[in-house]
Amino acid sequence: MNILLDEIKQLAEGKPVTEALTILADRFPGEIVFSTSFGIEDQVISHFIFSNDLPIRVFTLETGRLFPETYYVWNRTLETYGKDIEAYFPDTQAVQRLISQKGPSSFYESVENRKECCRIRKIEPLRRALAGAVCWITGIRAEQSDNRQGMSQVEWDAGNQLAKFHPIYDWTLDQVWSYAKANHIPYNPLHDKGFPSIGCAPCTRAVREGEDFRAGRWWWEDQSKKECGLHAAS
Image (cartoon, rainbow, N blue to C red; front, side):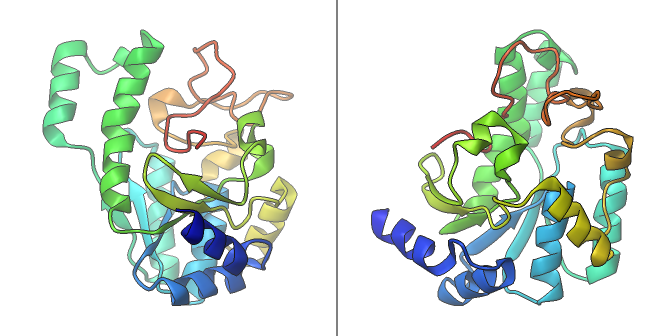
């Protein structure tokens, strides 16, 4: 673990995004993966990967509860770059059991129910998507939340037993948007309607002026760390 983490830090930490991703892809062929949820940060990283033809596998978690606008930008991304984006779905039987026993909206009833839904629709498919990888690329930025400010650009994911690299960790939101506009990167139109963070449709609302970046995620819950478990602190 420590040897791998130290090596990835030396190879990628603090380097320009394209250089870092290229180095990692060359050093670990077939073992670098990037997860996209089609938010603006992920779209920027997809652009780095696709426009430079980097051999990094890109995947998304198709939870079955995404916004129509998310499917729109998914299609636009495929059309723009002509590259594959692998889709990972939740286990059909697990979803059927959940809906049959608790109904389609059990996640509103308790934190435990919400985490159960996230586990079925996101955590388990993620584990399948990460199988065989040594490094997981993400679009996490420090300023997105207090919880994420405590992360590092390169860190160890104990749950999934791999390294994580956040190539735009130190970017501001203004930098992200400036880069996206300068490079004509397709983006989710919900960003123009007050959605800085976009997840499943029933669990995401627009953010009001002055609210935290992730205030629109699971807004009915009274807790400070708005995470589904994909990026739990290691």
